[in-house]
Image (cartoon, rainbow, N blue to C red; front, side, top):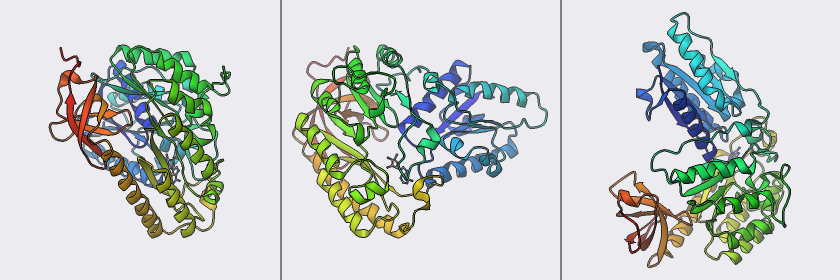
Length: 454
Ligand code: 5AD
């Protein structure tokens, strides 16, 4: 009864939380397997950002529950955002769930599973479900260091939890609670350990990383706590690349812009959520900036790092977004020139401000707007990759690609690179002479002079 499979939905924060749960379960003697069929326990780590994400996980849990008929000791748990958002109501819908664990209680999963395993082993009546959705003071400090997998080159590091903004569309403040930051020295220690184990690239994670430590730590020499943290990570031997996600335009100040000039390991890539390129819609969304301010940030970044790559989140069909508002947004989206973007069709989240707004946009119209942005994005993305043909790019080798026999890695601009490689290159920075590009990847040959393949 000790084989656990964890399925993760949603964002990188969820990926990171799943890694932590996996690591704590291994420490407790469980074996974490890579598919549901070999598992005695399946844990779904869920997302609530859109209804579709919740429905997917609910569907999966329902499907898994059928297995209890033939295998009564099979256990199913739901963790994370949907657990927090829907709470014990989930059990009404899915009475076969054994475990429901919220976003501040991931570290309690091994205890709960131990308890359930014992109860099942006693072969009495089916043990009652455990629901643990408590808020936990200092839960940011329960984020324990975790071991990277073998050969893991990139790692996510959680630096804070929660969100104090009040975007009209967003359920996250409810699912993740209010903002709490981890102490800088804990984060630095964790990254030092990751570096010792061969990790070369870290992505600092938080709902709004630009708010990191703003109540806990002072500004020093004009630098925000977040920029101070980036500088400290830059000093860690073995770490070659730093990224973060996600900043908020409101907190994106000159000190962070200058970090792209002054901090060598900080990659020329930023994921900066726009949400809408029309001031009327931004206002309705409760996003406290204008498109002019957003453009100013983009321009100041291009001024210090001309090769900067931009990625964003944008929502189409927010309530009240007219066809003309959308046109304005799409034009701005094209104008900025995003190299990557997540495009979301607005989804009503009950309990948020926008859920009760008039003028909801019909599904078909959301589809259309979605497609318009996708077309702009794929054109731009192809163009950007084509600019690299004939050039040499630094690539961090990650390992064999999922399909085919090529190897894969990322450039500093987070472009996906495919090339003939070798196991011994994993974790190394190599030079790639680019000879071909698609919208999603660049292809080429490695320039191997000076690379260590002993
Ligand atoms: N509908 C659609 N997209 C949403 N997002 C957040 N809430 C919603 C919603 N109700 C998007 C935002 C956010 C990303 C993680 O998800 O763009 O940045």
